[in-house]
Amino acid sequence: MTKNRKVFLIQSAFDLLGIIPLHPVFAFFRLARLGRLIRYHHLFWRLGIAGKWTKAYHRFIYKTGFIYLFSISVAIIVLSAFLFSLTEKQSLANSLWWAITTATTVGYGDETPHTAFGKIIASFLMFGGIGFIGLLTSTITDFVTERASKNAAAQKTKEQADIVLLLSKIDTLTTKVDRLQQQIERLHQSK
Image (cartoon, rainbow, N blue to C red; front, side, top):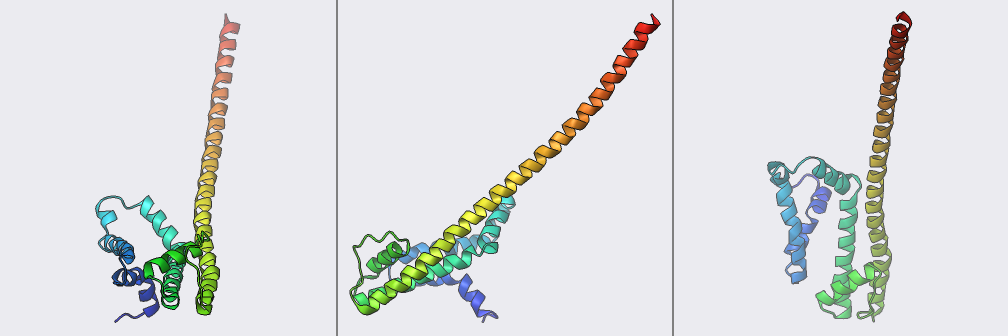
């Protein structure tokens, strides 16, 4: 028994979808189980891949809230497909196809709701699915933009430090050249 059911449900969402035996399309979610096995057994660390990449991955998945947005988006699409399948008497595969094309605003028009409840489901999917998929896209864009700006700022800081170092070396060399000129002038005067 888990202490926090909400966390358990969110962490186990892909496992639940992976064991639903309704259609082979849900076998895709079994890949998430593979990801959990890799994470559980610390395979990245054991293979020496841990470090910068896994930190960036962890920051992207958890600190941006991507995992929650993705889970909600998948849940909306799967729930809408299931309800569409029941109300419109369609196969689950066709309903899932309809839900994905509707949520991603592709909407080929090959599957459309004909009943009132089907149209309500479609409306829910359009607003919810499009909203959450838009949030997913903006989360990815924000993460990439933030990293690029941090890299640019770090590069600029490094370049400024290099310029300061070069200027100090130029000052040192100028001082040495001035001393050498003075020594040369003294030698010429003593002759």
